[in-house]
Image 1: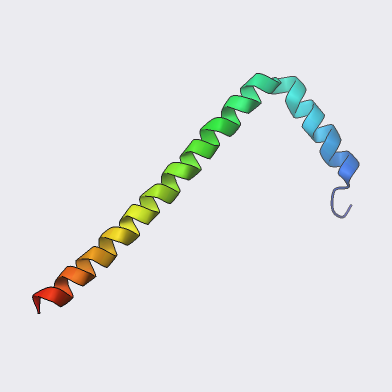
Image 2: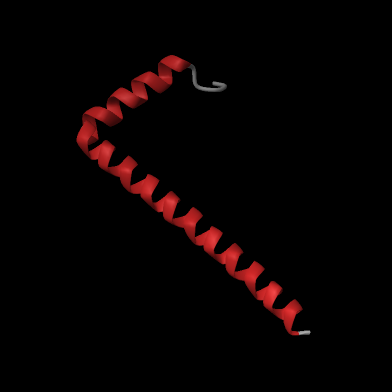
Length: 61
């Protein structure tokens, strides 16, 4: 069996496009991209908050 060749992936992509339609796949991709972007922003805000908390605790000592 082994790994899937490029032809297997192309046939799979074609079947998925036929089943779901390209517009629905575009919307799914857009939603997934927005979710990943929101997650990254949340992680950045959390990191910034932790840095500020550490900075405040050092200044208060």
